[in-house]
Image 1 (cartoon, helix red, strand yellow):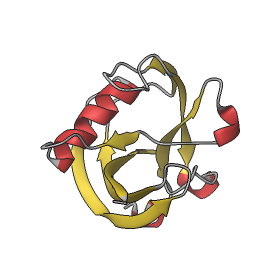
Image 2: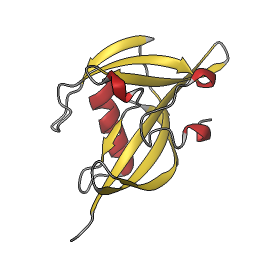
Image 3: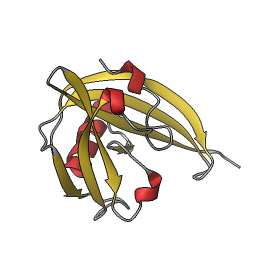
Image 4: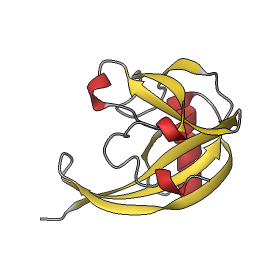
Length: 140
């Protein structure tokens, strides 16, 4: 049997306020028990990684990122999906309110999901869900 594999992208959207670095995080309405997350998702067949991260941020946060920089890659096996994951991490800027709610618009299963966003100081950052926080230490 062939093992399933997926390539994913993860967005660390950052800003600086009063000399403190902040990260944009969200909780999914109805799934708050999963904890805090950041935008990202699956790369479509034939899609470039940076195009995928821009698309995912537009779909999941309703904004267009800029000053995008690559942080690194992490390989792991997701038991819940029975899939080998290759996850690429990016840091970027985006113009967002201090707190906002966004309804995801995509052609995927997450269409219509509701994400409640907030900025959090990096020195107060809670644990991120699953493998999403692997490159948090690489944020500059």
